[in-house]
Image 1 (cartoon, rainbow, N blue to C red):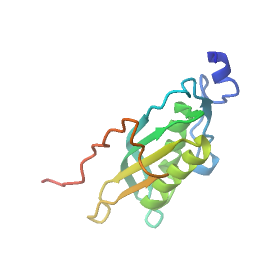
Image 2: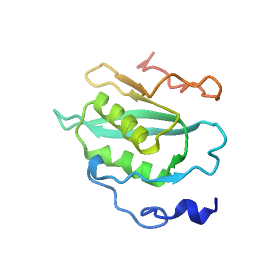
Image 3: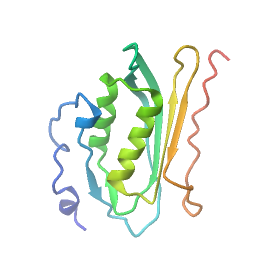
Image 4: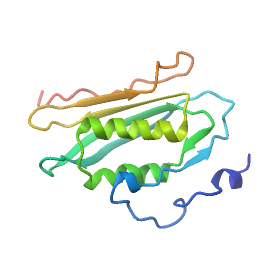
Length: 155
């Protein structure tokens, strides 16, 4: 598979693209996996993810870790960055943001396995961590721990 074949049809990579104002309007793109015959894990880390509280409009902050074992498709990283950034002005609870990202990626990529850990900073004094995965963790692919410590305040 040549590079030209992989990048055919992409609409955002290599050009100026505005940040979508809503996750539903964001275009997530995928490319064929040139190593589809090899089982391996991919990790994306977004340590500065933001969204808005749907009740107060105040900003919420999270450290997201997305792991997946690809099948035929890979997510195009610029489109993923723009998609995650589209949550910046989107009001939704932590659980909804985290699970929505996981399920949308799973539907787009049809991976062998996917998980997302949403490690949210405290709101009202309580941190909320949200986890989603598509099935049991593969035992024959190296999947490192997400290694995001639970919130400890000053402690």
